[in-house]
Amino acid sequence: MAFVDPGRLQRAIHLQVGRQPDGSWLVTGGTAPHRVAAIDGGLVCDCADAGYRPGPCKHRLRVQLGRLGAPMLAALRTLVPKVSSVESLSQVIEP
Image 1 (cartoon, helix red, strand yellow):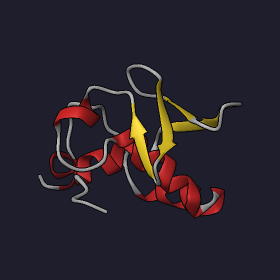
Image 2: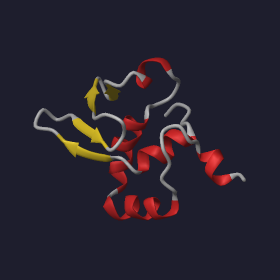
Image 3: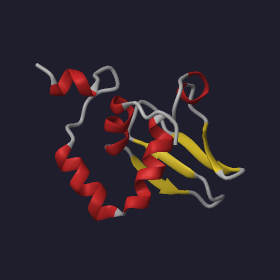
Image 4: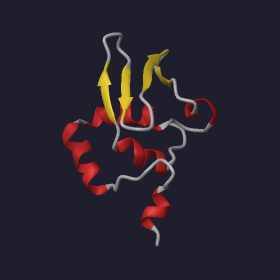
């Protein structure tokens, strides 16, 4: 996997994901729902962030986090504080 932005990962942990009848995933809990699809062995998201920033967007990260299983994701949610999309991990951790 390419570079992973810690702030995106932190926001991804707190998103919700559901599998759709067409095999894609619908990721909710952010400012708007987004669809992630598996295409040619990779994950593709319909969000604007996926098109112009390096590394995976928070929606793709959330789909990948789902592979950890519900108990692991629940544990991560207790360890990692929830922040808004304008905050970053460093703003929450560093005084």
